[in-house]
Amino acid sequence: MNTYKILDDLIALLDAYGVKIRMESLDESSGGLCRVHEQNILFLEKNAGTDQQVKVCAEAILKLIDIATVYLKPEVRQLLENFQNKAAGTTSC
Image (cartoon, rainbow, N blue to C red; front, side, top):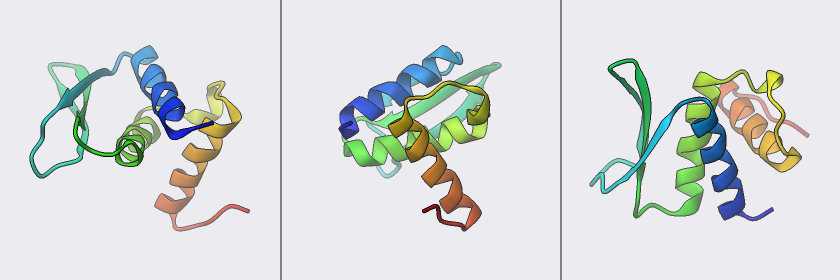
C-alpha cells in the first residue's frame, strides 16, 4: 500500500471519529491536533510531504482512538503500531 493511500485511510478514520481536517499553510509547523469549541480539529501543513502528513495523522489517531477496538487494514495497523511503539520507546519485529 502506498503512502498516499495510507494517508487517505488515516484521514478517513479521523473523519469517521468526527475530527475536522484542515489543510492550511502553517509556516513553521507541520500541523497537529487541537480542540476548539468541543470540536477536534487536525491541522495539516498543505505543503508538507506525504510522510510528514501521515506522521501528524498517526499521532492524532493515537491520542484519540483505541486502535485495538477498531478494524484497520493490516498496513495501516502496522504503521500505527510502529508509531505507538516509537512513542513508547520500544520496537516491534
